[in-house]
Length: 566
Image (cartoon, rainbow, N blue to C red):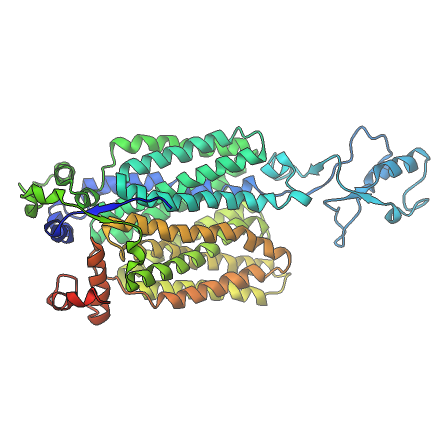
């Protein structure tokens, strides 16, 4: 784990940070500055929607059977029976009749099933490779490197290695952005994702492909998390729910929707991957328009830089900034005395430790469900491109519902209801007869609807619980747990080969359990974003004792000393 320290300034700085929203109220809620930041950060999210999920098409396995070399001089009758049939009267995928024996019978003029009992001919492995159906794809990584039969384990491993990269990025991006700033980390990781995805196009082997996919995964999650934290810290409280649902998550879904459209016209995996890198290069130009987080600058004691950004924002919005935006900082010598925080502060006190552990469990379960349902669209009945597009489109009404729920419902009710509903819908699949595939597909899409809503609610609900000085780190830790779930999701799908409904039973049960566990977390609706560890402890204690008080209320002041003992 990266050993990184985080800083906040003395008590006078902390008190000013607690009133950050009040100090910046002169900007308004939805001026040109906020609209610009909102739009540009959302645009930077689009490439994240298709980077990882591109394996739905790049890693799909088309119908295949053993190759019978064209140079093998046998009659058409024997060529047609060289591949044995399986129990469903389809050509077997991993074996063929021994071609030396078949050629001997053909050369002797014997007829299959007339002169020779074909089923008695010994079998052999596909030593000459495989022949793949070209109706859906020109090529995938499966057809490129023959990832079938004894090597079919490499396909889910490819996806899991991407999520290993995502896991690594979740671990390091939070501490780095809390230490060096949101903006620089956002664009460095955006460039890593784009450049290494482009290099991946020229992969000479499966191993090189996986290594590059791992690195692209590191960049993908890093810029997503940092963009989320940056928007949450710059935008006003009334816009944060909109940003976290109809902003970030919606634009992720737009990227997701672009994937099947691009894949439909670009049937070769290398061409598809190259096309998917183009939006990333356009996003690099956003560097000159997206500012650093003033909240983060304040947490580092860089008051002058924070005020300069806010004065520029005021000019964009056509309002006059106060002569002194943060009056408690007139004495600048206080801004230099810094208190050090580390990752251990997330588990140092019992209440924060419990919050972190419970959130990690919830993130883990939601991620398994969301990623497994997204990656499994190729296994559903019907057209793969249409199924993938529907899986993306269903997220749009889910995000609208999530936004409305965030505006009016407590966070615990939002999470418990969406997770429980999604879990129950997936459990119902076990009761559907196998021939009613359309009903199964409908239940999968409805389950995806609920889990998409839960995922979009989970980001702001988590960010509201943690303070600025470790908010990005906390999101990284929770996202790390999420990526462990994502890493496991391909193998949940793999279990469907043993029993069709087993993945849905496991995913549904996990998410119902997560919905119940979320009830144990504190409610954050109506609370200001905490700025320090002690502020977070005060909010949690105050919420438990007074459901409607704020951290600056007299009730909290009278009982603040108790939060240290909690």
